[in-house]
Structure formats: structure tokens, C-alpha cells
Image 1 (cartoon, rainbow, N blue to C red):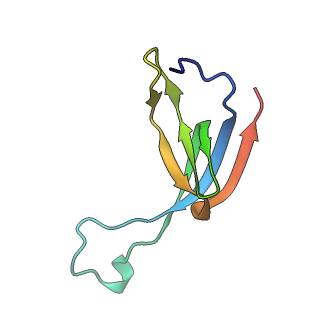
Image 2: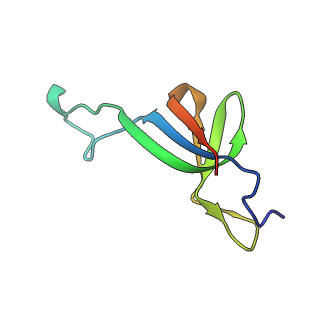
Length: 83
């Protein structure tokens, strides 16, 4: 069980995400949703050809906090940071 983030690189990710309006019925053309640009930063926990997983942290139980999977197709920019 991992209880430290030592060895995981820090990463900043700019990516595009889908969106929808609330309410989502009887929309005019001017009210149609558009994709949103998102920014996430944290520890790069998984790095695959299809997606990455970024987490804000971990705890003494060895579980991760505030993790998000981001598809590679959605990533506009990715910057790894050194500590």
C-alpha cells in the first residue's frame, strides 16, 4: 500500500471537456453548449496511451484523493514539473 507520493511526477494539464446546459430542453441555437477548457494539476498516478490519471494527494490509508482520468484525445497541453 502506497502512503507517499514520492516518485510520482507533478503535472499540469490543459484539456477540453464536454458540457451541457441545465435545463437541457427546448434550447435555442444561442443556448447550445460548447466544450469547456479545463486545467488540472497534481500527481501523475497513471500514464497510458489512452489516458492519464492525476490525483491531488494520498492519505495514510494508501488511497488517492481527488483523482481524475483525462483521455489523451482531450489533452491540449501537458507539462511535467520537477520538484
